[in-house]
Amino acid sequence: MKQQEGLTGKTLSGFMWLGGSSGIKAVIQIAVVAVLARLLNPSDFGLVAAAMVVILFTEMIYEMGVGPALIQMKDLQPRHEQTALTFSVCLGLVLVALFYYINPYIARFYGLADLTMVLNALVWIFPLRTFSQISYSLLQRSLKFKKLAGLDLVSYFIGYGIAGIALAVGGFGVWALVWATVIEAAIYCLLLVSIKPPVRRLSIDLLALRQLLSYGGSFTLAALLNFGARKIDYVIVGRMLGGDSLGLYSRAYALMNAPNNVAGTVMNKVLFASLSSIQNDENRMSTALDKSYELVFLTVLPLAGFCFVMAPEIISVLLGDKWLEATNPLRILLLSMVFRIGYKIGDVYLKSTGKTKYLAITQGIYFSLVTVGSVIGSKYGITGVAVGTTFAIITNFLIMTGWLIKEKVFSFHQVCLRTISSLPIFILVALTAYISSNIAYAMFSNSIVVMGITSALVVLCVSVSAYIAPSFFIGKNGGELYNFASQSARLKMKKFFD
Image 1 (cartoon, rainbow, N blue to C red):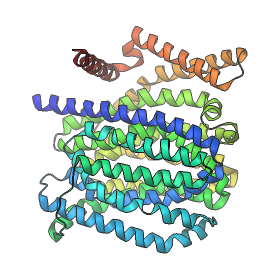
Image 2 (image 1 turned 120 degrees about the horizontal axis):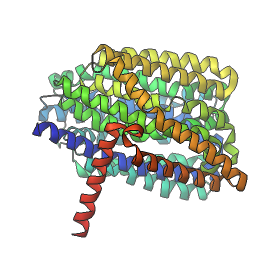
Image 3 (image 1 turned 120 degrees about the vertical axis):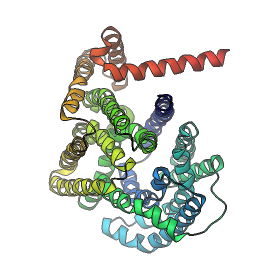
Image 4 (image 1 turned 90 degrees about the vertical axis):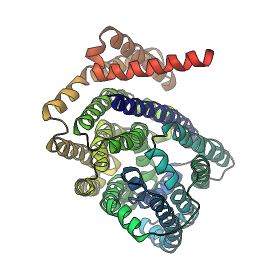
């Protein structure tokens, strides 16, 4: 029992630390993008979005099972760490050479002449990421989430908040985004290896490498297919609709995906590490996943409802009026927000239990659906692509949930119950936002004022309703998380003032 409480405490603490840090980072990202969107053009964002499809590809490569295997492996030895580091460093350097060669062909594929120079600068992220990946994985394995919490925040703030904005103000155009990305990666690498220095010996143990890659093989295939599913719509928009359309679509997708950057990061780091440590205890795993499922729907579904109602105001306030063409794609993509985060629960379960072959199959279906949906949808512009992508995300969620039911992690009845329990707060938020925004527009014409009034009234209504009828609006698990957060905050405040 004490062991279970200890793991629960560490997991919840990890959720709080990484969730809080990711939430703060999301706020900073919103502020930074709001500034950059007014200094740069959609074509600049489109060019970098096309390049980042290639760069983010490396995130799948440098995590090709070696990093997650270090977390999941039961009997981890120094030879595994040495082999993983050597393999990762070599991989980073090989990627630089490879992409220097193929970058002109990538630019030709997109029909964007400036893309080659942009990619040649961004490829130096590869060795930075691969070198620091081992330190990152070992910190996750030991559940040191407090140490990981602020790294993303600090590196992003320096890279984009300081360097990126300064370069954009200086008239560097697309290069403001390019160098901001490189600086962010360099700062993150420096901070990570200073907290958890890697082993100092480079060596390859073939048996250790086979053990690492035996887990990583299926994981890599699954990661490759998932990456393709998340980025193939960008490739299709850039190739078939051009850089301006890709800029608009990428911003709409980024706004929809912002909560996923918070919740998804927390689940991938905290839930994966925690479930890996109890992978042989089916009851505890089932309880953890059931609670995660409910909390995702209780938090993300009402947020999606608010954003759907306020989509024009969100774009106007955060990006500016020149981005309003992204309103309809954003609203359609918001329909998939909760499912985009929800299917990660199944991802984490299959990874933490080593069932990566099933994960690869699911991601293959997901990739195929996004590809077909985006190609067909592109005939109707970026709105059509958004429809195809949304359909694919929802279908992937249903397939992943089906796996969990098949594995008897939880029942179909539980899934329905958790989904239905989130409807009251969803309806409350969406209805309050709709009524409040219409009343506010009757008195004010400024989008910022309307957004502020509506947000305040929604928060007020949710707070009062959750206080009056907590079991109805936020459920038992939501109440437990609220109590844990409140208790932790009180203890921190008491310790500070004492």
